[in-house]
Image (cartoon, rainbow, N blue to C red; front, side):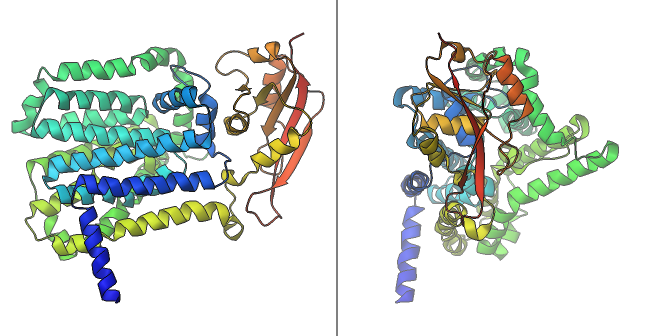
Length: 508
């Protein structure tokens, strides 16, 4: 019976990976499960979700330290549908699905095999930054992953069979990537250098069709590019602070050593799992294939090496001492395609290895869904409480039992985004964003709720900077209050506190 069941599973997985289409249908089901799980879990927003909820009130050329592409998408949808958990979850999963889909199309251009391309597409889930982290809390990185896959598709298509369409895909992907995450700029630069040594593809760089591609990229980037020079400090300071970790990092050679070590650790953390899994599935064939080469393999190798050398330059010349794994997405996302291309180029019989590797995908799907669920509902056993366990719906029920706000002034984007989700018809503002003060306060006719969180979960002390911003905005708090509730799914012993104050609007 077990042998029969195993045979049925193997047959089903073989059918799923028969083509990009069948694999995409399978993936669509997986992303629907992710959407259903997020809707079923508490509607308290994590940091990136809260940021999107808050920013969706504004259409701006720039929003601070992150480029605006994801914000623009979220704004466009919210302006039509209104804010809800569905509106925050569905677009993210559609964009992630697009990442996998275009990755599969890119793999098909290189591998020239529908079934092997489908396996390569599904193998993306073994990259922790794609399979788990992107699904758990990231938004701008999700857009970056999509742009990277789209770029790889256009890039490989242009090398294999250039058309005006393939060049335009490169231009579109470059534009989207540059306004998704600034580190995307490394990818087109590395691709350009990687092609130069290959005589048969060098002429792709002087093709007239590159001009409309550049024009498309410029048009996409232009609104943000015009905003950037006057806002360079706000756009770059938070990222530079994270990269340099000035309060922790040593100086001089010690800092360079720390930065290079963090880069090595980040690379290993990014590539180790898929390499180990593919090596375990293909066994001796994997090691035999390592020596295989082709023009396309050489281009991909140069692409990855040049990208990583760019990060070495960031460490040496920009003083970076703390490189995060997700920053390597545009550099190393191509890795699964590269490994499967090595195997195919070696001319080996891959059937046994593919049969061993296919079950990895559904196992990872189950594990990821289980992690996403248990990190919230099993929190009392883990001990580390997440932002999603903060009882915002409980706060709202308590705060609005006797009166409703006409305006909410929040201390952080985390608080603002969650209050925006709870009060979709009430403006939620943060002082001095996007303009000076809180101009909405002067026009508010009714009670205004000022709400904040402290530095820690159990300390709702208002921060001096927020208090000062309120005073500068003409908002004077008469009474500071505290509301403490236990974490959702907690053991009842741990709680989260917020501070709040009711004031009357400035309108007479």
